[in-house]
Length: 89
Image (cartoon, rainbow, N blue to C red; front, top):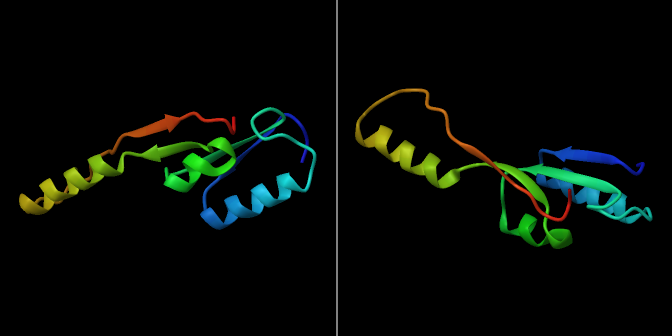
């Protein structure tokens, strides 16, 4: 781990290990090292004063899925993503 690096995290278990590794150093998250994680959760909103996430819009995904099921339709549809910037970057 070196200052100026940012880490992209895909899985919750990996996020826990990454945070533990950073805590073993003197580096400060959001100032010297960054974290970007996938998929918003309430925990990520709280960890380290907030983990920056890129996340699909799960509410929109649910609405779209319901429309497809109700209309008995099979299609590929893009679902919007959003970036939620927090203290970890």
